[in-house]
Amino acid sequence: MSENILEVKNLCTSFFTDSGEVKAVNGVSFNLSPGKILGIVGESGSGKSVTAYSIMQILADTGKVVSGEILYRGENILNYDKKKMKDFRGKKCSIIFQDPMTSLNPVYTVGNQLIEGIMLHTDRNKEQARERAKEMLELVGVNEPARRLKQYPFELSGGMRQRVMIAMALACEPDILIADEPTTALDVTIQAQILELMKELQKKLGMAIIMVTHDLGVIADMCDEIIVMYGGRVCERGTAEDIFYRPGHEYTKGLLRSIPQEDTNDRLIPIAGTPINLLNMPKGCAFCSRCDAAMKICLEEKPPEMQMPDGHFASCWMNVKKQYDSERGGAGNEQ
Image 1 (spheres, rainbow, N blue to C red):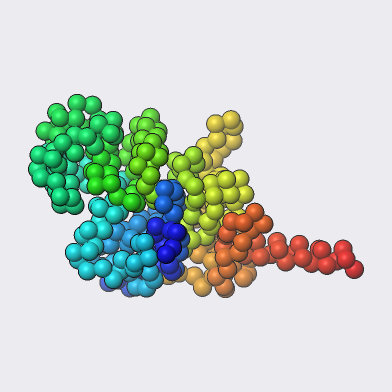
Image 2: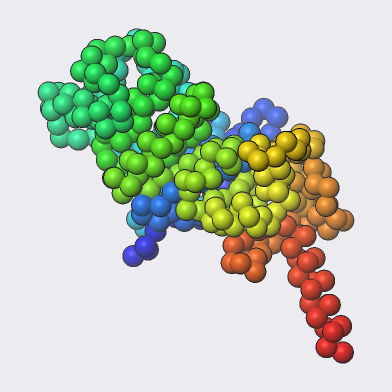
């Protein structure tokens, strides 16, 4: 049996619109080990959220997983029937969405929503589920949990609502937690508190986390491994140290240049151009039209995923060129 709790293999997810097929995720693969935190990074439209929704099987009506496998403990969840998929969601794998105000039902109390989820996925009766709901709110740092259970979402602050969403996601002790931009709607101070809370809970409960974000700075200290996505594909994968200190793809370098630095007054350098049109994908590298280092081959062929000298992987023709130049230089020195 695989040591990975989740394996995504060559996942392709498309949306079928009046304008044509939008290939939102195109051949994505990664593994998630028990108790580890994986970061998926990329700008809007890169395919990171669609990857998460494909795992949870909560795509819009026009969306469909076209090919690939999503293996949970060795079983392909794409073959699950409705009952087994319902059991997988919430009990085995939970998700936190980026905007808790639109994720929580405004006409039901926090207690109603928490208790319903607990009763749906466990054998607890209503009273036991209520106690579990109070226990979870305490765990995520919500004060006066008994009172909060009687309140409606609009009566809570943004940070408090996000804590309620985390409590809801963790109430059934899932093996995997997917956090889709969990701090986007929050101010910087609350962001830090939520991220610290998630780290604490991850250590305490031993679950694996997939952190989806557009902000590399958010996951700098959280993730064991990071994958960078662009145009529906993985362009780089490695440890946080690899990505931050030894980036191997021009897109990753562009993302890092756009992060504010504490010890410098240098101006931020935005990535030129606009995100790729997924309806009209180029033959070669998806990033080539925005890349200052683009070569002719970048326009014509997709770059292979290449192992860097430090062991992490990147899909960029510049790395192939550097290796070729290095080998030619070495051959020249031998002659």
